[in-house]
Amino acid sequence: MVRINKAKLNWLFIILFLTSGIAFLTNKTPLGNISSNRLAKAQKKWNEQNISHYRLTLNYSFHDNCQQEVEIKDEKVIAVKRNNCPTIPAQTISELFQQIQASEDGTKCGPNGCACDGPVDIHAKYDAQYGYPHQLEMELASNKRWQYLDYWHNQMQGLPCTMIGFINQKITVTNFTPIQPQ
Image 1 (tube, rainbow, N blue to C red):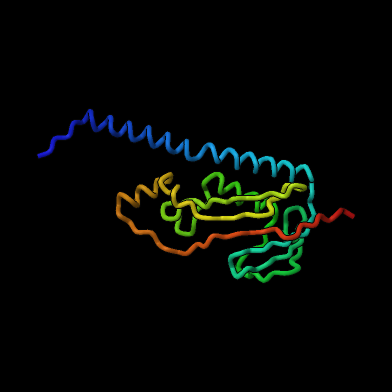
Image 2: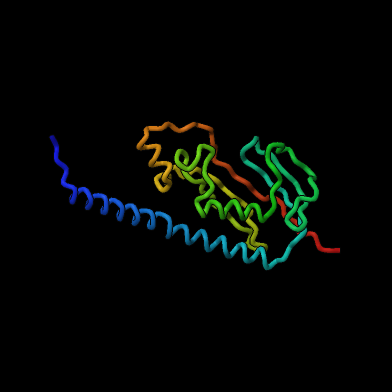
């Protein structure tokens, strides 16, 4: 019969816990700060513009490359000029920023959940003049699944993941027009 030395086992768990913590911090902090700083600067620039009324054309690379052209006032869609994306609700600039923030926070995960897909990483590009996000490229970060407790639970229990598809997605703002108050 195998005897396990409890003191050695405790030290093993402590070392495992510490290295996991270090790995978590080193994986999330350096690149996350660059992206967070870019997001904060872009949001600040957008907010300083104080644009409350605008037209926006969004192209979606998924859903058969559909397009939406909407008019937005006070961050509410007030008119839809064109929409061949029937399953996608029209989005405002604030909602695009919220998607990016959810990605930064690690709260936006793939359709199969954080344990199976991992979080959705969004690589955003911002408009130099106004600060709004003019391109969002989304992809699953399955290499970050280990950061979620459900992942470890599934691994320990031998639970399978569902396989709802997720194709890398891209949203591009192809036209932005501020509307001056009358």
